[in-house]
Length: 180
Image (cartoon, rainbow, N blue to C red; front, side, top):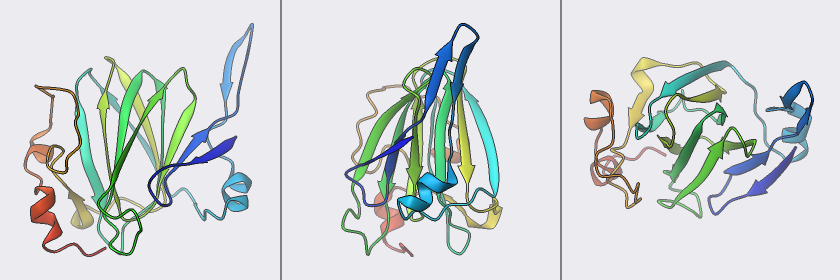
């Protein structure tokens, strides 16, 4: 398991250990010691997954303080284009975004720190995305930014969206009261 830095401060791509033989495949998706050795304090409090059709966009989601959390995201089945937007005013990469493809064939994960919005576009039908988070979900702290309002080109004319995601504030509207 190795970590790669990205253009966003504190966002890492994790190249997960994997091994295959005649039985199939084994992938290690988390190792506490690897995180500690890279000065990333991360403890999993909740884990969940989503199942998405091709061209579904989920995002851009985050939790407001004090319920904000780090996320470790990976795809055991299918493929996504994963997108992170830095909302941290004190960050050197404030208001920048980054994307990476996570697939069941590249064995990569992404670590997303507090203060970043997260979303993805499913590239295949029946894609499973797993989220490991450092805090428990709090409905009152749930927040998001409209997926098409911060300059990222999703390369999709008619995405499948939830009503919740359609109704999020635009990035400009959010920036007026940005608490990070």
